Structures are given as structure tokens and as C-alpha cells.
Length: 377
Ligand SMILES: [Zn+2]
Ligand SMILES: [Zn+2]
Image 1 (cartoon, rainbow, N blue to C red):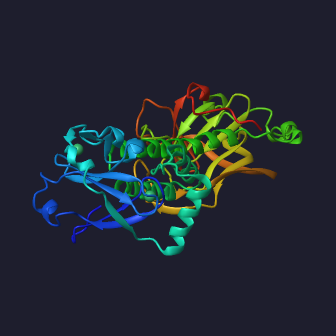
Image 2 (spheres, rainbow, N blue to C red):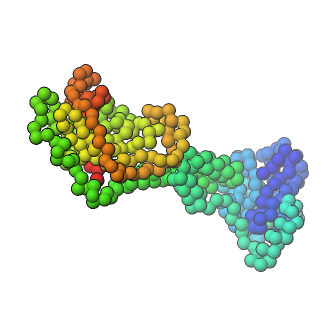
Image 3 (spheres, rainbow, N blue to C red):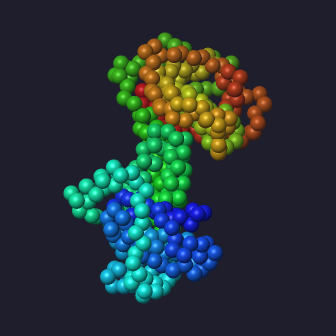
């Protein structure tokens, strides 16, 4: 990278040396960007040679060496073969290298590192030999970082993603590498977002102690005959009931009453700030009242509230929370009045008012909807 003083700062492709040097013929590069000539430089620590090149089409320059491939400014043949051109990694154009480039003494670049750091590099070289320092991101590592962080916390995942993109953008010269970095990062975030949904589905299926299986609705709560005063029968209630007559981006609050006697109440999918997700248990229709015996509650714990985006019906969205299933030691009995709706919004869905809330019947069989699974109690 070149700054205003025409001083070039770069890193050696071979050792970890950071150096800076001045352009030969100072000023010419800035004044006539179409004309700069490639020239040979030499690292003052490892004494490897590199060629400083400039692509007039892309308007940028950098170092290139045969071994650095994707992370250098361009592709070039082995210097011992005195290559007469190099190819820009960005635009794929080939640019000439004057033959005399190899005859002029290389510019010995000065290390910017502290003497201790230089000593350390020299020691590493003498112990392990000089291997090319393949700069740039390990793609699998970037993927993993994005993935893990997003699984832990969506918002934090997005911040890390943006930081990585900035880092990649300013840290690497060629578009191919940048593209790959963005691709693996996007993939990491995307899969990281998918995982919590998988976890959600899994934790809903909870094994319940045998004692609870035996506790269905106590027989004494069901009267021998139903009073004919009420128009509704128990059979009428079997099905899926939603507290809205229209289907929005997701389901609103809804009950599923199963013929087996189980019920499930799920909170609106558009409520992004709701902690209560569902209540499961047994239902009955007794004396004009809906009797619910809740034995299991699923709710979100922990997390923080963030401003909503997208299809949320709430201003805030709970993020980073985890699902918790609670088996109630003492089942919770709720009784709701249940009568035909007085003024239903639509007439094509049966409407029942449960304790002053109108619910519309979307289907007789909850299993017709993939999202409704009879709860395991
Ligand atoms: Zn070096
Ligand atoms: Zn180019």
C-alpha cells in the first residue's frame, strides 16, 4: 500500500517482515499512473526478491512473487526465467516487464520491525528454513467463526461478519480471494441461522414421565350428559383455531384440539418478543366451558430484546434466548367460556368466542397443517 509521501509499506511474502520503502523516481507513480515500471525489491531480513508491479487498468499496485499465487498482486513466472510479463489477479490482463528489470540491483527494503522481532524471524528461518508465508484467511476458519458466533448470538454474528468483510476488503488485493471470503462468511452465517430452528424443533419433543401419561382428564369432571342449552358440542371444537380470520406472515395465537383429548396452544408466530411459546395438555368441553389442563409449557429464557426487523408484529425481538420445556408438577386448570361468535369477521370459517376472544376454525384436523404436531405428554 502506498501513502501520500510515496512511501510503500508492505509485508514480505516469505518471512513475516514488514517493511517500507520509497518508490524509485519518486513522484512519477502518482503523476503518471499508466507508466510505472515493475522493479525488483529485496527483503532485508530473508533476502528474497519480489517484484513491485502496478496494474494501470485496476489502478493499483502491489508485490508479486511466483509462489504467492492468489494472495499476491498477480501471477508471475520464476524470476530465474526472467519472465517478460505478469498477469493481474484482478483483471487478468497481462502487463510487460522490461528485461532490464532483472539486471538492475534490487532495492533493499528496510524492515519496520523492532530489532527483537527481526531476530525472532531470523531465528525461525535458521531453525525451520524459509517457507512461503501464505497470507490471507483460512477459509474453513472464517466459515467456522461465522457459524459458531451466529449460533450463539445472531446480532453478534452479524457484527463479526461485517468485521471480517472489512478486514478482507482492506487486507487483500485481489477480488477472487475477497469473493471467497465473503462466500464462506455468508455460508457460515446462513447455516448458523438455520441451526437454532433445528434445535427448536428437537426440544419440543420431550419425553414426559409415565405418571403424567396416566393422568388424562379425570372422569368426574366430565358430566354424564351435555346440557342442550349450548349450541356447541365437543366434536365441533376438534381442529385448529386461530384468533384471526386471515392468514398473515405466520400463525396468530391458536389452539389445536385433538380428538385424542390433547390440546396445544401456541403463541403467535409474529410475536417476536413473546417468551411463552406453547402450552400443551388435555382439553374438554364441559357445561359450556372449555376446560384446559396444561401439563407442559415451552418458553424462551435468557436473551436480550433488540429492535425488530422483517415480519415481526412486535417492536422488539428477543434474540439469543434458549427454549426451555417445563413439565408442570401440578397441572394448571384453566376454564374459558366458549360460545358462538356474535359478530364474526367472516362467515366462511366457524367462529367460537373463548373468554372474549374470537377464534376461527381453519381446519377440522390439526394434522392437515405441517406445523401442528400432536404434543407428546
Ligand atoms: Zn523476507
Ligand atoms: Zn488489473
